[in-house]
Length: 195
Image 1 (tube, rainbow, N blue to C red):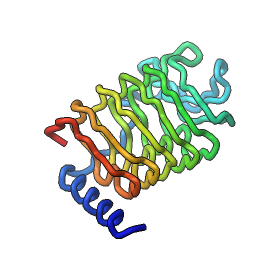
Image 2 (cartoon, rainbow, N blue to C red):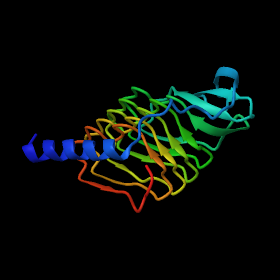
Image 3 (cartoon, rainbow, N blue to C red):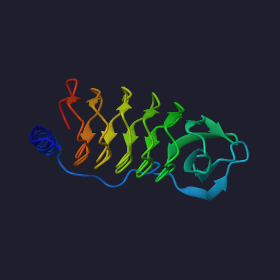
Image 4 (cartoon, helix red, strand yellow):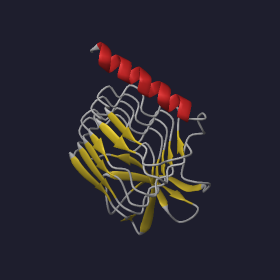
């Protein structure tokens, strides 16, 4: 790696650290309690989910082998509300489209998905959990306008990610959220005043 790239990475890490006031707890599916755990979907048998007390579900695992995957709005009659560590360590998935009903991407969701190139985030997404895309092959991402929080080390080590535009609505970016993104050349904060 060239000295300029190393310097850019260090400067970017320092800038992000200065802007951030520290990390928060791991993002989970709100304050809802789980009522049923590890249910394999009958409608979509490649998915496993946890049922929440609010009648919605958090998808926790993908068992399929497809390279392009779509997370549906509902499974077995329940609204898909959140994603847990669904794809953690999956080396097959290249692209994921997430239904607009999802408001939270939990910790480790796409961690170490080395083949992952693109994720279409839902319009209503509010939070991205810690380590969510850590060490993935992600090349591009477009954040929705309603996004409020990006967790600690959420995109750490995404070596193929080249640019990021942070929407105005984002109020918090966790520690080291974009650290070690060695190809990252541009971060546009779009007028965000409080991080």
